[in-house]
Image 1 (cartoon, chains in turn orange, yellow):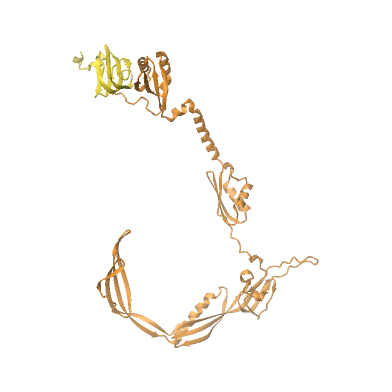
Image 2 (image 1 turned 120 degrees about the vertical axis):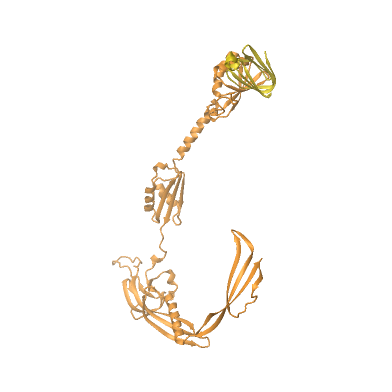
Length: 409
Length: 80
């Protein structure tokens, strides 16, 4: 049997369900067979027959209907996108679909979103204005954009930026910026050089401005060393009230002092070699003794605890085994020769000084000022002083203004 | 002659060949056309006569030049 239960042509192009009325139905059916029109699923209801037919065959059926005097009425149109599009009533839908695709394609050739990231001090508005100058706004055609060129242009345009990245992704224009680090505010307004610390001035070298101190003078922290020079004006010109910034070096002897202590005896711990073991298990945070010594048999000891936990991945067995190993210790005190202790105290004091010692300074003198013995405390102390030669002139700004305000005012 | 050559008679004399599947499917080869069709009766032209099928809810699933396939509750198949 080679007959197919499905109508010929399948359902892919869709089909029409039609109702045929008339006396010549049988004749019509015989004619369709002769014409090669395939009808399927004929169902008789009273004097009408419903038939399934392909849209192509439906057109060929019409002349036969006239011959046989039958009337036809479409009940349903089913399946197939092409059928629904080819239908006379759906022409506008097809046009709409084409228009939609075309419009989407057209609109995708513009920039619709401009996203600026990385800016803090420079406002979005400022960047947008700069972009606008080059014709880059929301709605600009993508063809007109040249990202590498735009990057350079933005960098030149906005001084505060140190790097600009422009990337075009679809209708999305991504602008990444990195801002230039700004100089701390206020520094540019300083004219005078003041003393960073107390010291004895050894040498004054003025490059710009006027020296306020001389060699041999003792200065205090914050004291004016070199003042900014007044602007030289031509006779008759009004004084603009501005000064040049002072530049120069003021070398001074600066002293650093520190005090530190060291013990006269040290505590030594030595293992006697005697060891005691103890094992216990922990269930729900409660310790249960298993075997070994219950209490520690030594006065001084070192404890080594090893916990054994049964665990696999994140599953944990609720019982832990703890092995404790007590090693007996012998504690002895060893006296340190006072000379060695003093050496140690001085070493510590020097270390302390080194922490506050500037990098550019030169150590001129190292003096151990005082040594102290504290037998009742078992320690010795040492006071150490270091004399250095360094440049103490620093620009006056608001940060160090309060330190030497009494001197400056 | 068909016996002599051991050939199927329906091929040699263009005789109709009917296949029935239970009382639900009726399949006919070598038919000459539809004479009458409604829910209860289907009359088909065959060589030297006609075949009448009676039943309920009869529907013609498919039909081609020499084959027809009918579905429904078949009660009677008659050769006239």
